[in-house]
Length: 249
Length: 322
Image 1: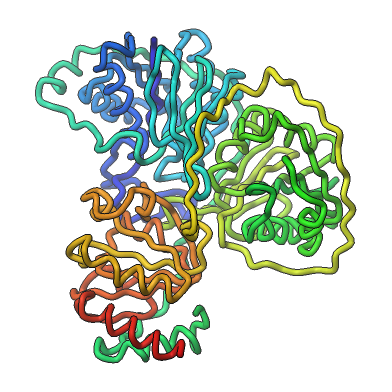
Image 2: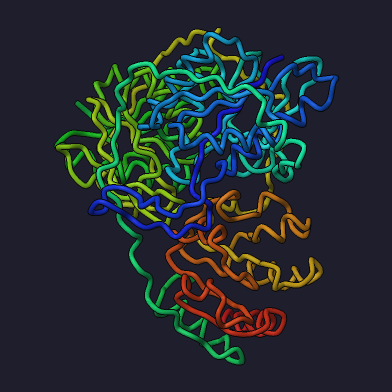
């Protein structure tokens, strides 16, 4: 079994977002780039599945669509434990563009399982995984918070509104994963970091795809009114404000 | 031309989310000078289907086929795509909930329709077609131009007010046959929360953090939630410690919620936590640390020890309820 893990690089989640070029883009000066948190959990789970020989996972490959500047994120994934990597050498224009590139590569390589995080913490799009599956005309299961293999078949926990389901689909498929898929992201050890240097990163040139959407500008969320403080000994006043001023209870 | 809205049902019933979607679709249809068709998949009684008309749907298409009883994203997106084409829809509205996230991207590829996801306002302009969407987990909002003829919008939950209208809806029960080979998802077991308010649907949420000090202190928080008819939630450290179940974790990597009222008790308000709750209409913070970032996000604050404030709050609320 071959697993492909899709990774995106995003600003560290504590970054204060600033804009550039008249609010047309996000100012990337000084930004610390990390593996998208969901993708990091997804990679961790893929490696756990490989660790258990009973699952018969031969390899875990990571794929990333991004320019050469995003190479450190790929090295990090290799240091965490991925066997090899593929980088599609292009700016990730939109979800459609990224999914089409990944689907194009996946079509040639016969992966059994493709794993994607449910969203990226920058664009919050939640679209790439489902799009890859549709491009490949294979099943996808979304909001997956657990995955294991029983007799070579996947058994997944899927989060639904107000509960969860245990579901299975035939291989190959796309698992779109969320929190719970792995307990904590695996951290690269020194040995992994050394080994990552010699692991193969295959460079793929992009296919010509027109993005379907374009971000034209950004704005900050509307500032909230200053906090009104209530005396800790008088919580009845809070209830009064919630009832009569905010009118929410 | 029409606006198509996909309205999911839960055991044959719609909920606020469904009516919010129809209200939003009606707003978009008004801008485009066209009408709204609502698509419902699965077994829903006529009485229930009619409710969609109360929010502006003029036509309700009901697709009932046993093969579609469980969510298979491939099959479901194929139905939505087919009906959209049949109805000549130029805008397709889907929720940004888990089901929407499962099907919308697949519809996008089938129809080559660009997606604006996690949208929280009516389109900013029609030409070019520009939507307003959350990015960077609520730290920035983007104006996104969708360049294709057919557009897909996934709407953030609790971001649009319900707008009631006169009901003139017609219901069409469509005899729809689906390619059974598309349905590949087998559901083996379903676990449903019973008797609890679903966190993502709740109008009020009471949430506890490390300031609650111990899982033994939760009964008073639950009592407050019960008095308010609220769902309970928690911060990440609390679920990581195993004090509360993981499905209560709200924050960037947990559940993202937008209730009318979010009461944060003993939660300092890290960037990651706020990313999950900042769309709440009102935030109340109770925390010992006056410099905690949660007070910057809150409209109402009490500086004090949760263990001392909570019982007082509960008894004050009980007093008023009498």
